[in-house]
Image (cartoon, rainbow, N blue to C red; front, side, top):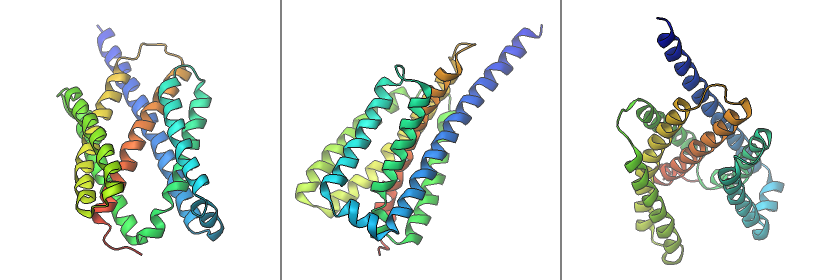
Length: 234
């Protein structure tokens, strides 16, 4: 008679434990990114070294893209410790390149935008966790929107339209709000369908991959909001 309640309890513990691990790693990544971004921005030597050398700066960006690809595409073939190290390295490199925002926007603007972003992210993630609606179609639509944003951003590099830039930012907010809800639901489904007795290393790699997805959603949502709300520049 107690088998069903016990299994339900195990499933609940499994889901909550996995989701907690995902958010813990995401928080670690965001914290590391923020600390490094602030430290670099306040070091004249580092600013001169990184932003005064285009080869190094674009090399860092290429390195970030490579790390995202490696973690996403090869997570099942690498050790959990390696996946963790790569995620931490990515967050650190992202902090270096994102230090530029401290040279463009006022610290008060960055702080207020961060809290707006955090509240928006939490609301989107809670919706993704709680809704019974299948968000797969929404996720597919948002991914298409993401490709549209990338293409429009590349085009805008050449035409330099401030109006288009603002439109891209508003659309970007909607896209990353939708992706946050979709990714959260996907992680919940992943946790619920994990077989019992799964190795800790496999669970860790899943948590790292999930943390990377939500980390990217948060960072991009923050940047879109900062462009919209960041009228108060240095």
